[in-house]
Image 1 (cartoon, rainbow, N blue to C red):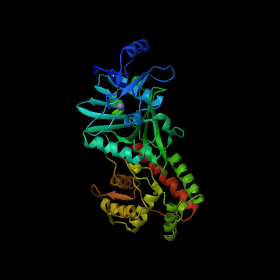
Image 2 (image 1 turned 180 degrees about the vertical axis):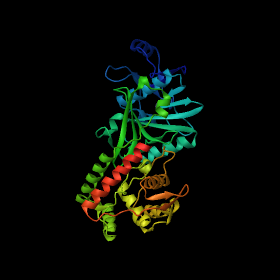
Image 3 (image 1 turned 90 degrees about the horizontal axis):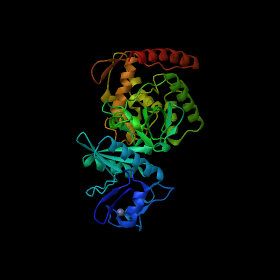
Image 4 (image 1 turned 135 degrees about the horizontal axis):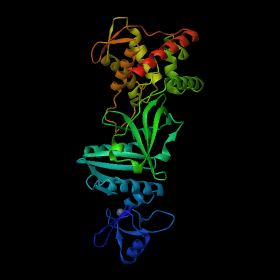
Length: 398
Ligand SMILES: [Zn+2]
């Protein structure tokens, strides 16, 4: 840990820049105590590790702080110094007695209280969710920042994310999603934005890197997120994914494949309107190919031209699939606007742009054209070309 108190109760915070000589002198004269448990701690001034305090004995504090990596200590120290430089009231290794939580940094900004957690290791999902909820219930804005070395960047427009990493997802005031990460070695933030998953773990994404010295707190809380996605690389990836699926189908995929087979559908000849990238699709863990197929067979395909379709109706069928565990939602404790309704609405609005529906009201649409089911590879290719042209026009008009 980086903070301790002297016998007289003077707080020593190693997050500030102390010279080694100053600390050596201090150590020769003073004893140090943990501000949380009151136990005696040692001031460690080695050359290998960052200067820090260490508990002599076991106990809760020992378990909490003694396994900290240099990477973690260095990261929280840099983040703390960065806040202090901006004159933001901050406390390193804050302990909130009432809720018994220890955010790495507590700071106050714009009259609001923030709990910053810099997470360098994987902890059980349930613990992260519990801590987040406890912060939210006690007037904190939690900010979980994941260490950059945990983010697996697959080329510039892709990312591999585990369920644990999705827990770091935050929303900007404008409702855009991003995962903030920080690297103390490079002294830079790495934001993963525009996350559009096509499978449970793989997603298209936009990576942006910012040196910490060029950033201020607003850039962390409200970063600019670029929302473009390249449709032809999306399609290529979806095709690869489908091929991989038929080669190694999981148990859940079996029931899906079985169902579309019974419906006389072919996985490789699904309508081009199925498996589309939409902004809120990350709230759903199940691949967009699966949940959009379910919406199609449960509801959209049963409609005739001129029939009305509502968001509520689609959501009803969608929820039935959730109950049967055929669609799974993600756990996103920090994301404020993440509901499956927004994802379904995104999808309806995109289909409206593609000429399938006419919008009649906020959540009511009318079927304008039946979705075409290709019967041959050639028909599929032709409909893909037409669809791509429409989609490109839609993107450039936005
Ligand atoms: Zn302690």
